[in-house]
Image (cartoon, rainbow over all chains, first blue to last red; front, side):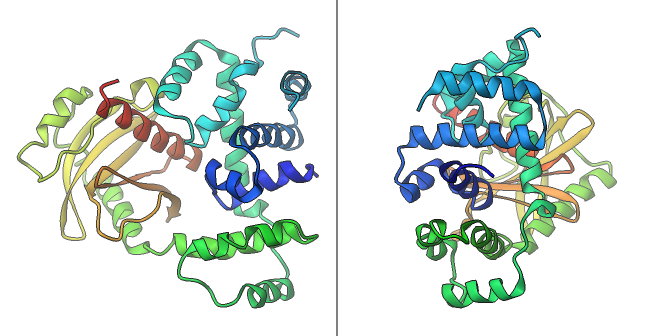
Length: 68
Length: 260
């Protein structure tokens, strides 16, 4: 299961079809954080669903690079 | 293992924003140009689209038990006339232990208003099918928008924005006139490999609807409004591709209007 902030962002975007602005307003997070959480949430889910090993490798890279 | 399949780290968020239609026109154009030369980012975009397609599949959606659904409906009260009343409560249920299940329940429940114009969706699909069956796909078969756009002059009372989406993988096939719900509409026809996308354009009604993606009889539809016009894209391409088409249309139309 994805950590709460990532799950929350993903649910609001994919299930509720909220805009980034609406997600930011709902969660109280800056829009840049919404964007990074969404990207990270999808990467994590991509590893789980698409099972791409290289995604996991990239995932680790991006974690180091983003650090937010 | 070599690195070329990895997405550029500094473009990852832009790729996601692009797939969400949240990237501004300038950044979209810049990213599109980058995508042409970067296999890693192209693949990342494909993966995002694939993932989002999977997430859009109703089979993957959690179905809450009837008892829980009834409890949610009781807590939430009578169904509101619009989605906004439900959105205000989003914070309340997100923090709870039942957050995921409630989100899925409310998502299903909120999905209902999206289907509040089935007749128009049905008409658009009928128009799409008719155009393919009758062999009357285009009145003017030209891939050049500078030819197609002026062709509508004098034939209809509005000027549909005609954008070149060849770079986005949607070459123009042509245009035609059609009638929807007794109203003259412009139809722009685009291709996607062996599929056809009909883009119906008509003056927006007073009760213009919010952008939405839906499906009808196996066809996908995307609708949105801009500059007083209402757009309905319909095709048998998958939902993610149609979403990409919609995004490309909106961004390119914006770029054309501002002279970029």
